[in-house]
Image (cartoon, rainbow over all chains, first blue to last red; front, side, top):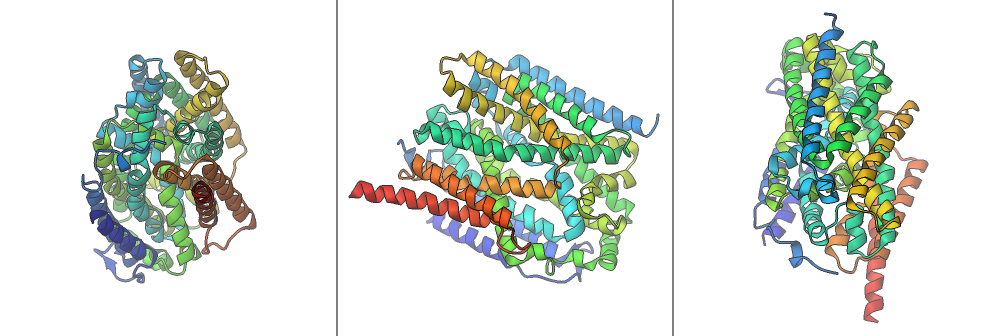
Length: 71
Length: 477
């Protein structure tokens, strides 16, 4: 369940990365950040939160994936 | 003291520090391969993160990215940093996590060895060794070219770039050959902290020198407003943007020198915490370097082509005093050496374990380590010879090498999680991906079109999956 929801979140983030809302050189947010840069800074913050979720034990347990398959 | 004095003092101090750390690591490293190549698989979170991040940050980031932002603007941040903040931790989860478990279970020390043993194919091990080496050598060259650019810019040409490159290669190979993985990880902590702190300080100082961040950005808006938007740059057209996102996200886990560091983690908790640290560290480093490059376009206009790779050192030289310039040059050397050491160690370990040991199975562990030290010296000499040829820009070489590593990703992933993916499928995947990649590079693509990496990756996945499924059908019949 959590893996599925996480996959949906990652897909949504990738979609926004590929087709983000674009702007022009005005206005400068906080006087410094143009819109096209600010969008990707916010995107990075959301990605950081997704990584925090990914690194919970529910998604990333200590055990080997699939019980450690031996060939 | 001349202006070169502080620069010389800072760089000499930096070299002395890393050599001392290397000497201490040497005293604590046993002459057995697991201890020498993997530091006894005992890296905790801080050392593991700094080793991975320090290895990951190269002149590609500190020189190539500001150089690219100088011409292409703020889109460079989303094009590279934002996507890898998700991509790198994701690949550590999908590939690094099972690889760590399997490397422990099988006692594998190098990535090529892991897959050769797991898929029961020495031929696959050799092929992986060849592919890893083929793409790591040009990547090594970008680092050393970066040294030359930085030194010549900071010293105003008083010190030759080739002389500096030789000094860096010698210092790096000395502490790496002596102390192995432990030396490279400990020095990476020092080096990573050095360049992170310096970039933040430089960002503040340069902004201050330009009259504040707001004034600096406003100046760009007046002089080159196209640098503050993404639209209109052919490189950032959707197909090119997506292709590069694929390359830059997938390539890092396929760097053999990164995967080996994953093997060195003490436990899964250390890997998890390392992933959490990656996004904020990337933001802290990339936002300043991109903005410095963009501000440079207004402050120091007129740099053409690869000359823009010098923009960061030029901005530091213009807005910071000689002592900070010295610390800045040492920071760039730190970024270079923290990658070079990992690459030397990994390639020499693969030469020892995946080639020499197969030819001489009776070789003792101590002799294997001794040969790895010799290989590190030979690699350093080979890199210096290639640097003498003065190849293309840092970003261009990086693009080629990164694309090549991505061709290995289907094998690195499917070889761990899909039991039907055997050595034949892996070899087919690697060969098909590389053939299509090289063909696409030779034929050429539009700057904003689908890049060679996407075609090559598609071919690698297709060939591997078709062969693996074909085997499954044969088995059922």
